[in-house]
Length: 463
Image 1 (cartoon, rainbow, N blue to C red):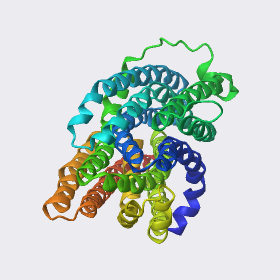
Image 2 (spheres, one colour):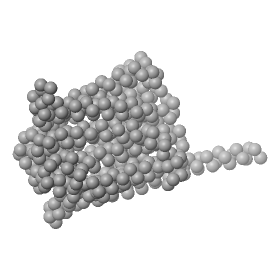
Image 3 (cartoon, rainbow, N blue to C red):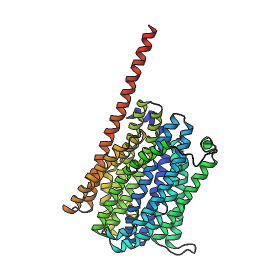
Image 4 (cartoon, one colour):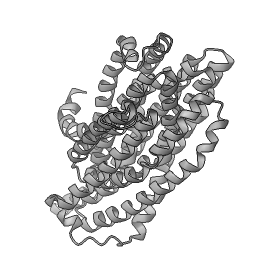
């Protein structure tokens, strides 16, 4: 373990830390909304939980789809193919921008369905307008993602971090002004948090575009760039590989969103407690996706160089880093569960249940970290279809049904639902690790078989 960390840990961490901060920027928007909205009471907090859970389903499909740009660009960078990188940037930007518009329209069209998922009516009434507002933020968010994946695919990860952190700070400031009605603005409550999110994501999109346009490091890719330079092969790869990748993330997030809906069947207190626990678990998860993204970049780069031995070492190092990090998070969730829940709300009933759920969140940290590294490593070798099936079976085929049975049939309530989530994540983690180990091992063996005859011929000629 120590040898791999010494060999690859620093380089992986150098890429991972900025990506962690960028990923946290997405989730911290929801965390900031929940923390500040929680001061308004349990109904607005439950509404934020419901809306953010539904929004996350749409958002992560788009973000997951955008992740295909990273290995494509990383592999092209490993091959020093500038033209392929330019085509990937142009076509990826158009595809993701169109996808953002389509997802925003889909979300708006689905708003009336919120009345039919068995949630408290007061919660739905508050959640609908908030969800409608943040739905429009998908358009600038997907444009931002396209530019971000381009930059990170070239191993420049700090820039997106600065932009994400800056936008998150602005979101908190706008939240304070618009939620509580400061500086002469009317108090908009939960809707103010939605407007803040929309404004901050527009700023993110503009900022990263201006950064790429004006930075000399990207001049060879952006100089006289034709925005209509179509590449049929690149478009085909993005669509063929990107959508299954988006579905991987969607299956996991929809599992948690469905868990939130089942929590709503248990009442407002359970839903509010779930929002607190899942908010905190999402923070550690998004940090782990930073290590996963670093694994994707480095695995893809080594694949482009055909260095399969180093490619495997990079992945295994990422597993070790994620497990160490998530282990510390698990410890924090268990030890400080009551204090963490108390940051969100002062309702004793909600805090008590949220503290119990944080123990469960602590238990599944290692599984959550391992499965996201597995997805990142497989993404680096552009293996996406089988992982999509794996996540579907693990989360929807096993995790959710078991959670429902335990929660409602065996009357374990909220803890039963979260036990199902734990089992689904654990199964996915084991299965994904097995697949990467098998595929990458096969690549290594095949490359050694190709080298051996070449060495033999060289020896024969010398003698």
